[in-house]
Image (cartoon, rainbow, N blue to C red; front, side, top):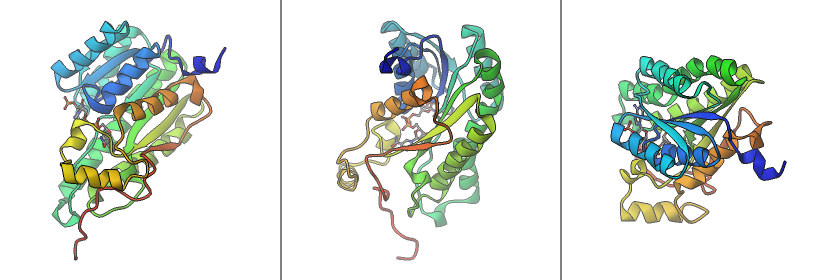
Length: 263
Ligand SMILES: NC(=O)c1ccc[n+]([C@@H]2O[C@H](COP(=O)([O-])OP(=O)(O)OC[C@H]3O[C@@H](n4cnc5c(N)ncnc54)[C@H](OP(=O)(O)O)[C@@H]3O)[C@@H](O)[C@H]2O)c1
């Protein structure tokens, strides 16, 4: 067996949340190219159908399952749909998440709790629903959480999002201990990556500032992230668990400077 065979996912089944566009769609495409059958989940039906169709048109196997990760019964239904379609689950990518940065003094407690629910609660819920089925049907597998560089580097403006992603990174380490040796759990601490979500905070000036403050001198592209996700999903990373891989262009401080509260 050659080294590239360790990056193949033939016979495996992957669920990817938030896969209608952006990083999730890129992960679904990458996994399908590597031989996995993929379950593309998000709320907007046209987008998940389009993402699944793109995969099928390229010769891969994909189904689209509408799912709002904030609704636990829909996460149960997602796991059920994957098992009904493909009979096993090997890989789960908890990718749906996010929340806008903003000054702490303009962030309500409800905003903070919502950021936690969206970024940590949903990943916890899907992991605990899927993990027993992964062991039962595939003997184990790999869970990949899409975290953020904002979860390990503190910066003004990130009290809610950064704290929530920091907790997601810690949840990754906790579950890795508890689910070993059957299920590996790792996260990617994503840096500024060109997607619709990033577009909402970009203008020409902010973009050039971000690029200037990023050692690698550019924004990330979704394939930068999906390549790492493929490694974490595949046998190539069989001895890696509980790790948070930073795919962020070398950032040691955030590249979106925001004002301090008191000048
Ligand atoms: N882009 C970046 O610079 C960056 C940096 C650090 C971390 N990240 C993380 O990367 C992940 C993906 O972000 P992205 O930039 O790819 O965002 P995106 O392009 O906006 O895509 C987000 C995806 O998540 C889905 N989604 C949103 N709410 C959902 C819900 N309640 N249930 C199910 N699916 C939902 C969206 O579809 P629907 O709206 O149709 O449901 C969409 O398919 C997030 O966790 C984000 O925090 C991104």
